[in-house]
Image (cartoon, rainbow, N blue to C red):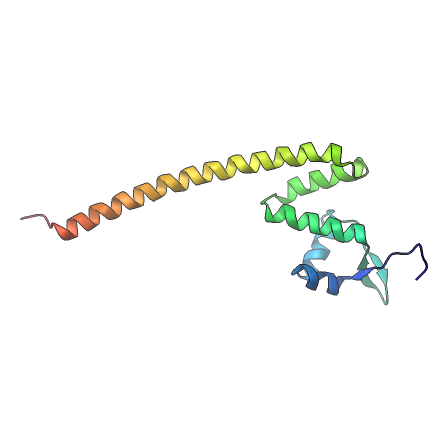
Length: 134
């Protein structure tokens, strides 16, 4: 390896490091979230530092509940603006705000459902403790 070359990480090692499958990495390539990998050492996929960072970013977005369509939009913005964080950050914030709203709505629905179930349970418990007189 010459001084200007950076070390590459093979797909199997990368998958193990990130706790995912090689199929997941290949899928992200197929759908366009990641560019095509380098093929070295008998055709094995290998990734440079920037590609590893991109994959970690994709996994973080997935963990945050960001959908594939939104990830593809972010990836396109990121690539179009040559990894300009000033351009992509507002879009990430907008998507995160949208997800916060969805989570808040879900929490409200779950809280309402919890109240309904607790009330139903109380009525049943009351009936068990004080059966109706017939």
